[in-house]
Length: 142
Image (tube, rainbow, N blue to C red; front, side, top):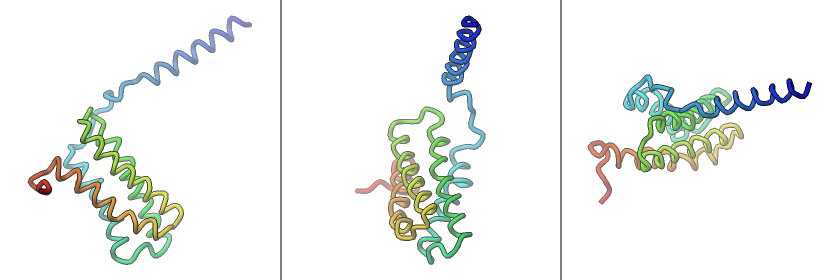
């Protein structure tokens, strides 16, 4: 009986160890970085910024849209750093994840003031990255 129990424990630990060691490179991106930015990240960030700058969330439908957009921004960071990016790229992506997470929490709490306070950090997370990695669009600050 002890032998069976020990065998089951070993099998469980081995299977968990193998699952934990699955390399992230096993996942291959489907979209290009440009497609990801244009079709996923830009619409999500734009949705939040437009809602905040126009009138603020007015009802449940607006708050649901903010939650979806904020979650999209926060989770998109995983896609942005998927392929062993540079340290600067990862730092910029983390800024986006941070603001997306805060926006999600603000939407969950229906906290208009907290959401409004995130408009500038959201814009900054985008322009910081673009200045560094898209200098033709956002020239470096002088």
